[in-house]
Length: 512
Image (cartoon, rainbow, N blue to C red):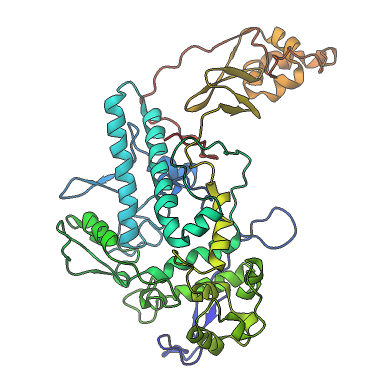
């Protein structure tokens, strides 16, 4: 779905000056990801949970690559200061750095621009700082315990800042209270549900949460230790996927002070030319950049997002019949600009329509965007990030109290700990007795059983009819198997190599 350059565009030429051919901005459609026939749904490559995946990786393979030893994250050392920097890669597909190296993080955009790189670096340093502190007070902890505990604290801190400081300034406290997004100041939160649907609405990802593009300044400011400006400021177009500036002395500190002390741009329909004309451009090729707002509008159309007017009625606003019907939410001068672009009020796209609204009291966004956002935010991870009372562990669909054990399958035993369920395989000492008590079906379904008794089961093939599939080992009152004829396996020797990282799943309730 390439975007043709219209006649009279103030920056991009309509035709190639060398060939005379029409010029278009390249645009690739999102891959469909539905499992059944019906409306087209897209694949979301990022996890919807606020689980710190931008720090720790969005899949197990990347997570293993980012993880170091002793509970820490992999890091490179600053050449002069010795501080931790992100790992580097010579094969980053988007890298434009003269050095040939770009940084990698849990999200593929860690090197997109220096502000993002600085944030990813702070996350990494915080994790490794926590590991050092935890090891000091818990010298008996191993690699896995240190890593997971530091990860839990880092993610909880990130979530707390997001819900306690960021969202109230974006949405306003009225919306925070209306949609139940306010943090508990005391006591535990007991509303966690492991069955909560974590998916987000397409409108959130495709339009509503792209409002941040309006907040960008053309330069990233730098501030010294006394908050005096450091020149030159960082021009965005010079550093898209070119993070070599991060090797300069004190640059991470200068960037973070600059970001924290400089006001952002206003949230409105105006967006800096750094991302409307120069996004990801090759500085050697004129007009090779891209237009991010145009990509946003086209992405919404690619995903089948209805026009802005459809969402007015969904968000308890009056559906506009004429342009004048927008005057309560959108200033007159903005309506006049929209009329120059769109044939009718029903054609306005959701992204520019949302940016055009007057902000609600105490927030930055208008009445349409909060409704779309807040209907998504609770389903992202509203329950998991809060301080949650530890009432037990979910093991095979059952709640097991902390300190108690449960045998969900004939050859697996689990115990509930404050850190979650810990399961181990049981060693079979009598396959014949196991088969009589648990039943052939249960033994075959349990890979631990079938792997240990494989030879015995093969010999029993001819007598399987004499074994009743309904004869099972008696279960306990809570549904588990009685652990007869089984003994715990011998202890495994400590492996000094990096432990195998389990694939990330739904994050457990956080204890902070």
